[in-house]
Amino acid sequence: MHHFAYRDGVLHAENVSVPAIADAVGTPFYCYSTATLQRHYRVFSEAFEGRDILVCYSIKANSNLAVLRTLGVLGAGMDVVSEGELRRALAAGIPAERIVFSGVGKTEAEIAHALDEGIFAFNVESEAELRAMSEVASAKALTVRIAFRVNPDVDAKTHHKIATGRAGDKFGVPWDDAPRLYALARDLPGIEPCGVHMHIGSQITDLAPLGNAFTLMAELVGTLRKAGHRITFANVGGGLGVPYHDDVEPPPRPEVYAATVRDKLANLDCRLLFEPGRMIAANAGILVARVIYEKRTSGKRFVIIDAAMNDLIRPTLYDAHHEIWPVREEKRAEPYEPADVVGPICESSDYLAKERPLPPFAPGDLVAIMTAGAYGAVQSSQYNSRLLVPEVLVNGDDWAEVRRRPDYDEMLKIERMPGWLAKIRFSQ
Image (cartoon, rainbow, N blue to C red; front, side, top):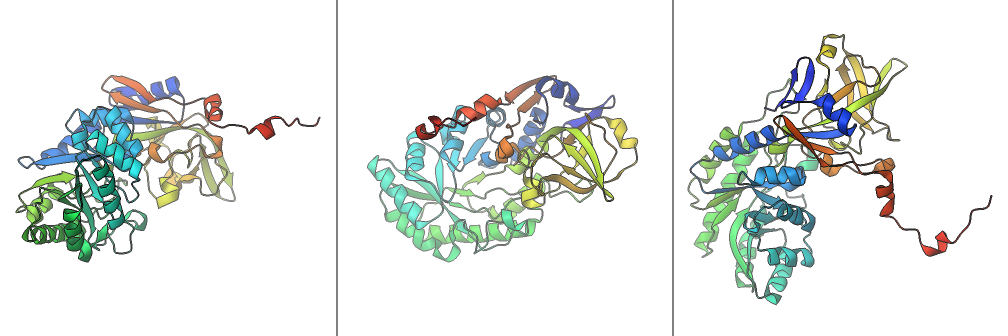
């Protein structure tokens, strides 16, 4: 469910015309819907009504400050994986006690900063990290609340690049080693081991692997409590998928996912934490681009647009599918034929779609690349010295540019010419 629809033949974001935004900020640009963000958060959180929960939105999906604040005012916490993301969460007004810090490579400086801010908990991913955390906390005479991220060796049955719960993945501590590590954590100064964390992957559309992981989590909590550990929260991660294709069966709805959680974890008697990202942000955003040319070579049709792999890398990186809509609805009535939708980047891997049935386009036509609110702008780059694209947030009849497009001077200013090169004069 999203709030992008045709009105009077023109694609709108809520009540705002997409062409009107394009005229104001130029193309390409990302456009997010407040109503969709709010709805997805509420549908997820309300599926657990009556339970003590904390929904920590995964910032890595979409880290725009306006998006974070939109969710924060609804009660969302945040899952962060870097000091930069922590600073973003705090800048958006998220209370520190609603923030959890994940990731396999937290530095001592990042740990110290998060401790000073008073975050809720750390998800610990190795013994080495645990010992570093103890040293930092002890030096500050503070106690850090932790949950080990336990790798249950469960295949999430998703794309191999976004699976995180198998024995060969870099994430978490081995299942069999968890009891020893909790015993060690209890003995180390400055450490309070009071949670368990699991996250087996992203874009999960089959609940069976999650059910298996939750069963193992419940078993581990029971084992730890029998060993004398006081486990007060269980963090079940995120990973629930979204429908990228219009013509495939949609992933399970949040209430069905919630039923699986209740079935497997009902007897834990502790606070439940969740880390959804994609399922909240993905359908809440589109990437709007303008057609530059159409090109035909040896029976091949290319639609060349002004967005590229540096703006949305998911098709190149994950072979991801994004529906592509013409912004003018009348185009849908014209004959469709296969086309590669490509950008101006000097790479054969620069494409947004391959062999996609699409109507004819003329230079200047607008297209909307759907389900681009997650892992879109956050993974963008300045490859080929292209400017980062703006982000727009729509709220009913209103809209705002929440990240502006920099100019070329700004792009160049962060670089410095060393003195020995600055003194060289070019020969005429």
